[in-house]
Image (tube, rainbow, N blue to C red; front, side, top):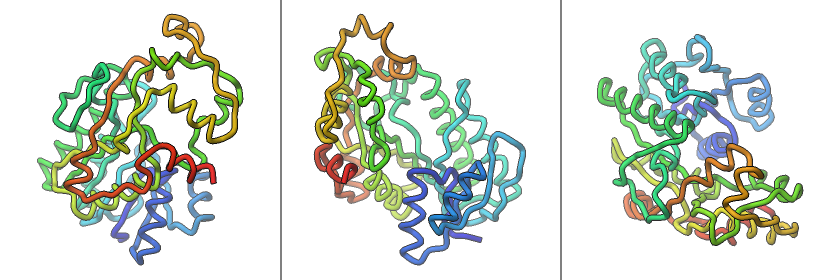
Length: 288
């Protein structure tokens, strides 16, 4: 049995696995596709296939493991049936000792630009956020019933190498004017990996942590800063009224919510010192 199991070992999980492997830990990444298996094999990361959309059993023992649940939910509906299936499979594979789940700050819904902490009520309206809250609730039920330790990370927008909106900028797609744009929050992938490790090692059972760099800006400002750092033209700007006919449904969903995240609990309880506390520092590394 591997002591560290990463379900959904993709962009974040691969970096997380590498950190544990370099520290001499036993790790296995679980991925949905053959392409994922090949990608992890090329990176030297032990991997097995697990498709949570089907009824396949978990291919490895989990009893007593430290498990990271990074797999995304289904693309439709209000429930995360994949997480429910994962929990059900613990009966055969064994129950992990500790589980860190990556959720989203979208579970708070629209906060009208207010500064919020982990005690802010959850009021999601978008289906993608409802699925994440459903997963949180299901995992809390598992923790209560089985005694496994659960830590929930509510993660802001992840950016880093290969995870920047460069194609959107190259295509000159419009954005809402800064004065009308909502606040959004971000975290560099390397800082997120450090938070994941800290949460697994010393997060108190049942804890929830907002994961962001603590320096929110408007979504439009984010794109403008990326364009400037990458040497690309700034996107054309439109009014919020025009956005409904110019922006995708997904982007409109992000435009409908505004909040500023406090990361004080992250820093004080986990002792995290971010490597990239501002976007300027993070972009410099991501584009290096």
